[in-house]
Each structure stands twice: as C-alpha cells, then as structure tokens.
Length: 67
Image (cartoon, rainbow, N blue to C red; front, side, top):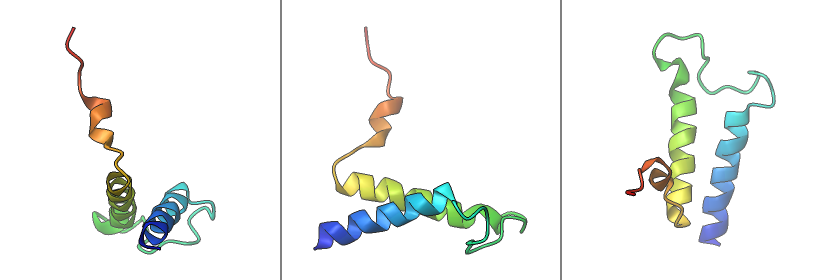
C-alpha cells in the first residue's frame, strides 16, 4: 500500500507538471517574481524522490563513461 501511495504521488506530480489545464490549476501563480515557479520545483523534487524510492537513479544519465 505504501508503494502505491508513493507511486500515486509521483503520478500526480507528473500530471501537475504537464499542466493539462493550461494554468487554471496552479498552487502559486507563475507571474509572482522569484516564488512563482516554486510549485513546479517542488513537483519535480517529488518526482525525483519517487524515482529514487523505486530504485531509478536519474543522476546516472548525466555521468560520462570512460573509454
């Protein structure tokens, strides 16, 4: 049940980032200086945490491989 709720929170954060309502559903309006994008940053942080919980480390995508 815990894994389901964590996965569901990641899906909700992903839908929030996709923003299918074209700005109608906003926690913090984007036109506020500096703090306007904090809700999107929080949603992305939640997605990274959920992926980490399920064992997907996205930092590996940015590492260089030695030849």
